[in-house]
Amino acid sequence: MKKLEQEKDLNKKLADIVRYAYRHAPAFRAKMDRAGVKPSAIKTVKDLDKIPITSQSEMILLQKENPPFGGFLTIPIEKVERIFVSPGPLYEPIRIGDFAKAAKEALSVFGLGKGDRVINSFSYHMVPAGLWVDQALRLLGVTVIPAGVGMTDLQVKILKDLKVTGYVGTPSFLMTLIKRAEEMGFQFRKDFSLRCALCSAEILPPTMRRAFEEDYGIKVADTYGSAILGILGYECEERSGFHFPKGLLIELVDPMTGNSLGPGEIGEVVVTLFDKTYPLIRFATGDLSSFTDQPCPCGRKSYRLTRIIGRVGDAVKVRGMFIHYKQVEEVIQRFPGISRFQIQVSRSGYRDEWMIRMELKEGIDQEGLLQALERGIQESCRLRPDKIEFVSQGTIEEGAKKIVDQRTWG
Ligand SMILES: [Zn+2]
Image (cartoon, helix red, strand yellow):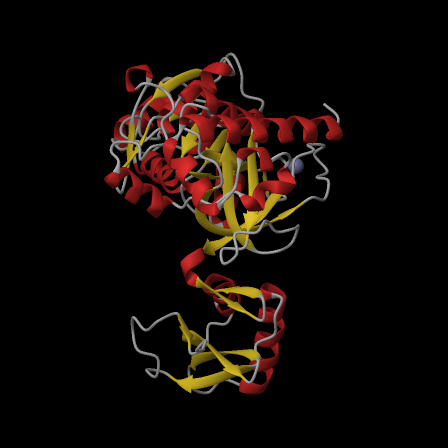
């Protein structure tokens, strides 16, 4: 489909779901009424900013007030296929089929198909992840081994006996399986047939990825997803970020204003699903990221999330830019002389100022370090700190706040 047609298609889908949800989901209708927005005002994706955002904590509250689905279910409950239970508890009347499509798109990166046997180590109960992946693998013609979580020794045996070619699950469990196999006296590369792994639900550290690929010959693709919304991004062979899957609408949104942001701007990942039975329209993930609209060398036309920066609560806005604790931490970790650090934000006149206090081990050349830190942090945060202060070890208390915001707004 050409880009223009895709846009038209998305505009129509958005207008449709908003109209439908307004008519059939009382909770969505109440939100729109409170915001003073009529469904007829939503014609294209440019109108997204008018639609109020729903957060996970708000959903938990709404479900408590109006059990079990908070007024979002649009069909009679006897027609619901399955109800999943996320921490909260949050009840989700989710149809596996819609979500399996995104998982299938992510898994097709490996060229998996008939003849492949894939072990699925995601949980098959309470949460939907196991069944999403299961159905996606079946759609690709793959034979699935629904292993679920745990039982390491048995899973190692399964990997070997059934000549399993693919793995889906957390990277840490895959490493546990490999190490256990080695303890049992096997040579992983020689004795096993595993050639690819789709990782999710955890950070995939670069060192672990290198070990999978170089030491064990396993191709790895990382994904970004949510327990409620499914896979929201997947790596292609270029590893240039997380491609948006087809069939859902992803925005980056300023958490303060709810306005949709452009490429390169840091904001919260907000998702609209087009499932009419349980319409999640502008559902906020709580994750901070940014996206790029630049074409990817792999040829896929979709936009990409560049990287997940962290959670909204661990960030602070300074002179209109998000500063996230993790962005600073990534830079500081390169310098072994620094133990703890703390970000402080204050206001001087009408200008925000931010400084970082760092505990420095004794006997380290401060001058050279300061310059390297300033450069690194400016690159990572795209905003130069007004001050970096070195303090002696023990100055920042254990468990101290990561970010201290001293600004007062009055
Ligand atoms: Zn790509």
